[in-house]
Image (cartoon, rainbow, N blue to C red; front, side, top):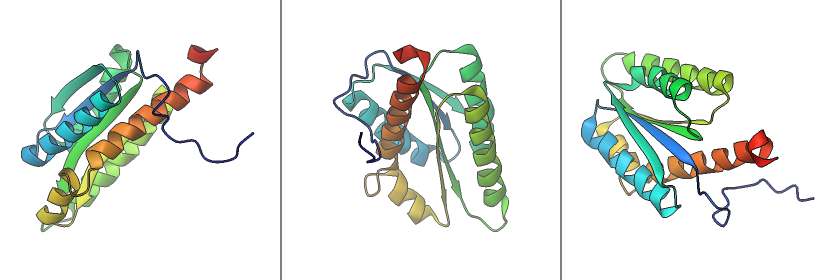
Length: 159
């Protein structure tokens, strides 16, 4: 028995996995880049069933994830948004409340939800994290696949 931490198994089949992406429209260009990077990695990992929904902003993402989980059968959900600091602390409120709601939904509904809300102090930081310089979209896609594999391993799907 190995005690090494498991990681995404690129040799394990991902056939039949269905992944939903819920993305904010606010900061559209940045979120669009995240979507593109995420979808490209999902397709490269042989995920064929990818569903995309858009919502107004990051504050609406947890509700959309909950709705999708309730009425659709997916193996994981990836939340994508970009929140950039401004003159007030509004970005902190959105980031914290969204993260808390996403975690609560994930645990209550027993579904992996990957929090892909990028929170930065500047436009430049956001551009770095949403493009190819720091490919967070790829990271979110791989995390979703790994968590879907983990869920499959430890639930009735695999017994």
